[in-house]
Every structure is written in C-alpha cells, then in structure tokens.
Length: 637
Image (cartoon, rainbow, N blue to C red; front, top):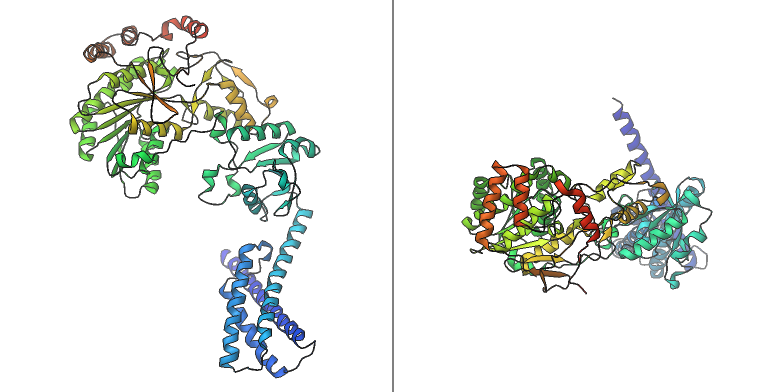
C-alpha cells in the first residue's frame, strides 16, 4: 500500500521537473529570437506581426527537437560533451524545420534570412551555457560542503581522464586535488579542471600535509611492472594508501568504472613484464577439431578452456571430477562459446571406461592433460594416491587416446619434476619420462614444464591476500625460499604453443626470469594492498615435507634446444628404454596396491634416481638442497 503513493509522488516530481525545464527552455528560445531581432534592426522592433507569428512557431519546433534528442530533463549538473552535441543536433534540426515551415507553409517571406542563422547560434549558446553554468555551480557547491576523500592521480593521460570523468559524478565520494606526471610538457596543464602540479617523484614533497586523508590512484593502465613498482614505492614513501587502474588490455572492452579500481594486479608481482605468446599458429591446428581438457575446472584447466575457445574448435570436451567446478565452468564458457559445441563431463581420469566412452562419443583428436594432484605437503601424506592419480591416470589416458585415434596430447608438468624432493614432483617426472619414452603409435605427445602460477587455487598469493584482508601475519616457510612465477595466461599460452610447435617426446620450458624470493613477493603484495612493512608481520614456519628452497628448470643431463619462440626452450635426454620403464611401472603399480609406502617410495626412487624423498630423510635432503644448489635457469643468456 505504501509503494503506490511513493511511486505517484516520484512520478509527479519528475513530470513537474520536465514541465519546468520545457518552460525555461522555451523562455531561452524566445529570448534568443528577440535578441537576434534586436541585433538585426539596431535594437528596434519592426515587422511585429511577423515576429508574433514566428515566435510561437519557432518555440514549438525547437521544443519538439529538444524533446526528440532527450534534452527536456532537468539534470543539468551532469551535463557533458554528449549533451552539447545533442544540443547542436537539435538546434540544426529545429532551424531546418522552422525555415521550411516559415517560408513555404506560412509564407513568412518578410522574416529576415539572417535571423535564421543568428537565432540558431544564440539559442545553442544559451541552451548549452545554462547547462554548463548549472554544472559549475553544482560542483562548486558540492566541493565546498562535502567531505569527499581527497585523491591524487599519478598520470595525466587517457587513463586519468577516464578516472576523472567517473569520480566527478555526484556521490562518488572522491575529490581529485591534483595530477602528477613525468612528462614535463604537461606541467601546469589542466586535465578536466585538475592541474598537473609536478613529476611523480615529488609526491612526498608536494603533499606532505595531507597524510592519511588523501589517497593515490595510479592511473597509468599501460605501465610496465617496473613502472608500477616505482609508483607504489613512491606512494608508500609518502604514506598514502594507493590503488591502480585495470591494465590497458582490460580497458579495451569499455571505459573505466569506479569499482574497477583494484588493489593489485598479479602481473605487478612478476618482477618482469608478462611474456606475449601469440596463438595465431593454433588456428589451423585447433579450428574445427574436437578438443578435450582434463582437470578442466582447475586454474590451468579453466584458462585452457577459455583460450582454446578463441581458436574455434568444433567441440570442447571438459572433464573434471569436481562437480561444482564443472557447474561454474559451464556457466562461464556458455558466454564465450560461439560456434563451438560444449560438452562438460563429471568423471575420473582413472576410470578407463568413462574416458573411453567420452572420447569415442566426441571423436576427440586433441587432449590437454591438466588433471593431477598438485599440493606438495598433502601428497607427502598420501603417497599411493599421488602415484595412482598422477602416473597411472596418464597411462590410462594414453591407452584410451590410442584406441580412439587421438592425434595430439600435451601433458602439464612442473618445475618440481626436476631433482624432486616430493612425491608430487617425482610423479610428474615419471609422467615426463612416460611421454618422452612411449612409442608414438600415431599420437604426438609433449610435456610442458613451468613454475608456480600466480593466483591459482591454493597458491601463495590467494593465501597472502586472505591474511592481509584479515590483518593476520603473512606465513612463509623459510626466509630464503625462492620460486619461479608466471601468470595463468602465460602458462596456458605456453601449453598451447607446445601443442603447436613441440615434437614427440619434447619437454618445453618457459623463460620465467630469475626466481623470486617468496618473502619479497609477500612484501610487494602488502605494498600493492596499501600497507607498509611496519603494518605487516611475517612469520617463518619452517620448510614443509617435500619442499625445496629453490626450484629448478632443467636437469644437468638435459640438452637445451631453441624453438621458434625466443622465450621457450625444449629439452631432450629425458627418454629411457620404454620396455624397461613399462616393467618398472608394473612393479610400481603392484607396490601401490599391495605394498607399503616404503615400497612405493623405493620403486619411485628406482625410476627417478634423482628423487630424494623427505618423508624419511627430511633433514638430509634440506641440507643437500641448501648446500648443493644446481643451475636453476641454465639455457638462457
């Protein structure tokens, strides 16, 4: 019962505002006509009969044109460039219609031709002028009385203009007081009324008195990682909270909105610029093909699905045991799929019959195998499960692929497969040996080896972010622990590039730069979240079972070769005699199902001699890792 009276009241207010706007604009049009008449006849009023006939006709025509272009509303404090353009369109249209009616319908031949033009200019000027004046007064009043948070923009380019356009809207809660930019030619210029007062380095000096009342927005969407870190360090030195815009590629789809200002972009944590791996070579290999992704609901698997869809396969088959993950993946991919048929299956990669039915029914030609157990400490306590899921599922998948006529298979491996100290890393190394040593039998198989993926489920970044949100200490296992990091897009681009250029048995490795200390990553993440080092406590918890201080990318016995992409290397020397490996795998399977954990570890060590299990010899392996480091990133100049 309450809603109807409120609705009628709001409707009445809107209707009255529109009537007031129409009457006021009619007065402006009439004033423009009289002023044009005065100017034409030296401030006299000859031919009053013509004027009296023409005035209501002109007002009526112009109000219709104004209404046609949506200019009858009274919200003039929000006027922008588009409104001025609409005023010009309405003015021109009204002038043309009025001229035709006056000359050829009402035969007002005595109406001076010069007034058609002068009145049009005066009308457009008055209509635009009162709107701009209304906005100026409203913004001045709001800035004088409001308690909006003060903002300093770093950058005075296109990104700053978009931010200003958004923040200047009433109710944004922000008031921009200055812009900073390193381009000396912009010094003293105004960006939408906000002056560029100096270079970025001068932030601490120019705003020393603002303190916590002010916030910095880094409005440089094209900034490199190094430039972004510099802006963050300067903002932190000045003691300001700071946020950044989305990246340039994220802005292509549309303008920046206020809620898109973000705390951190994972690319900012890399310590290097993301590597661009174009996928144009994939069109002819994936377009029109039936492609299957195992582990499709995971971080890597879901990104694989997204990028594969851009290559227009005829069918994309997504397999994962996680029913909830498959549900959410289906919701997302349904928006991306165009001509591609989506098939989403809940299934275990160890289930031969299930895999066979899925593959046969969909005539799968290409397989990306991302399904695996990946959490090192968890797998240390579940050795048999790690071997069953990571090793024997691959053997099952290869057999099914051969049966159904699959042409290509790419295995997702890990840098933990190099000189492994964990059962997870050892199983990944066995998988590499299987892919490299198994006879092709019509299938081209390759492995892709890469480091930690920033932001993947269970990785350090989401854990650190949650700890920062809850103001908890950041927990790190060791002050010297280092890891190679890459983004999920880089990782998946490498996987797809491996599919395109890899030969049978290859292990392809991405140049991920130098390994990053996890403690440095934590500090960078804290800074990008607007916290100083004094605000964030770091606790060291000790190396976990199976964990190494530094990961490696290559074995010393591997030959490192170039590929068609300068940032990707391939290795040879990973293969062993297939028949012997097959016998060892049969014995490993027997140990998994009939033996003890010690039997399984012993057999894994026999297959992977470099494996140093921490389950029984943790201290020995940690000391070995600390005192006998291997060449971690050999192969790049």
